[in-house]
Length: 249
Ligand code: PEP
Image (cartoon, rainbow, N blue to C red):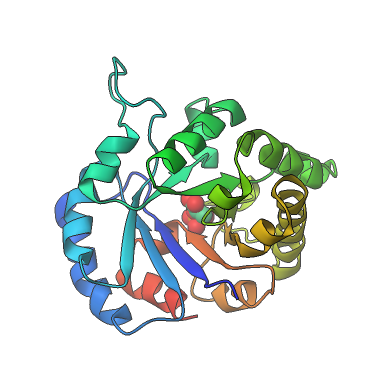
């Protein structure tokens, strides 16, 4: 049995005061919730506030990105040790917005993945196709490439704690959601590919989340797909009531 994960990606929203306000409202709403793992990915500047506020709760906190180097002359970047030192447990890697606006390639993401594992941070590896790729019938090929490139050099036992997020780019922030069937099939392709690369046991343990315009109204249908092990939620995670409804789908 894979424990579902419901994760919030706040992107570049919320000041520390707003993060604090969110958590004051949100934590009591999910205080007794045990069925799912709850993750929060606030911006770097909100990490300390979020980690302090969630201490001892059922909510874990991760960073939305990090550099792969241990330290160095990389102005504006944050290292795995810095994130770890704050008390973060997870890190989001390869989000399509990082790939599209900040030139992240599968090769860079692979380096970050290794750095995250080395530092004991659980990676949430994002992948997904564009609308053009889907329309051209290339979804499976794209997911296969993302898996092969991002997972290069990863050993099966290290990968079991991984989380993968399938995020079709055409569904992110657009209000268009993949149907449960589209999501289920994509997740099946990803798991098959992971089994091919890292073995069946690892593939059966990895949680694969769906992301792309998940809202309280569509969460249940998506999350009831057997291959869908949770959700990565952007816009609808910014409001405590809305995110709590998704957690309790
Ligand atoms: C995301 O940013 O990972 C995401 C899925 O966003 P949204 O839910 O707003 O589509």
